[in-house]
Length: 479
Figure 1 (spheres, rainbow, N blue to C red):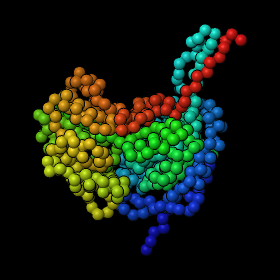
Figure 2: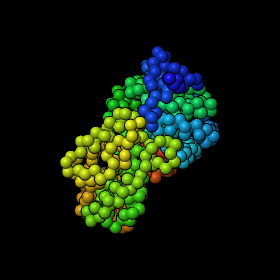
Figure 3: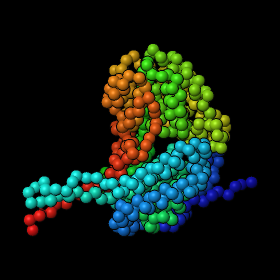
Figure 4: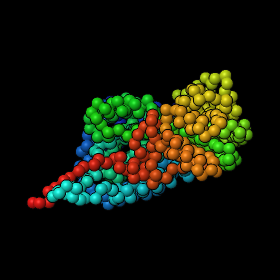
């Protein structure tokens, strides 16, 4: 007996469409390993159509007032709340995420973030107009950049879609958004929700693979390309965009150091780090997966963290007791397993280190100790439920180890010493530093990194400004 697969479609110029050449790819539920839908494998003709629709819609959308755009975004936020259960179901099928955690930890922040950008639409800031040259008045205009080509990742398909479309639309841009080829379902549903609210062509969704994303970035129409993804993907986008000097917004990988000093509350640190490391199966660029612990408490910390890992549960989305679901796809399961299989002889697996079950792509919460700074698993992003532990002797060595990777997105410091916390937050080379916590985000504060973690900010007024351009206007006041 075969189950008929649901058909997902692109959303272009206010209507749902199949790929122009009819090509599709199967979409797999990672909790079962079984296909549940087909998605368009969009090609150049589809990209051209979406870009043309966004370009045609741009002048009218650009010319709406901030108050009008605010009303539209507030309607979108309300619609997300009203259709929350549909969004949760689609996201869980996309990713295998626990339903209850998606309901409590993702949908409310998403709605809040849309409402934040609705307000930001009416609060563009700039230098005051004035006479900076005798007889001349200068003013600064902030304008939308134009059509935005946006590519969202598979780890947070819904939330990352919000982080992209909300500031772009609030600033007066039009959007062509592509979800990951493994997680298109919730984005297609978002297109249905937003499409009923905005004018046609303002918001478009095209599904497809890396070639589809490449065609979007290389297209002449977009003024800006925004991607959340791997470092490799970000480098390719930056290279492609450079050919026509297109603006680029990159949020790439992470390898967050979690620095635990000897005076920290070990019990609280272990509890919070386990959650921040294993939430979403560690598939988070800010995940607390690289722990640095002072040598005096190292052994006790490892023992406690290994127990916390063993007590952490992974399983099916409808199990209310699980912290996280499966890895997103078979390739990601292979990648995570490969890191553990290639561990050097001096490393020790303290907990986990294996696949869970034969159905789906589940991996056990894992702790690895005995590692050196130049080990592969320390230097490269695992993107799975794996926490590594290293020891350090003093503050200087902690900083050396913490900063000694190519990523620079997020970090945290655990200490009761205020002066030390301030020194560490100053010297840690990361876009975010948490003190005695790890992973909370708020719409009002920026999220983004340095080095190979990319550039540009998500969330906050800074993220909003990234979707604007600045124009100087000078006029004579002497007639």
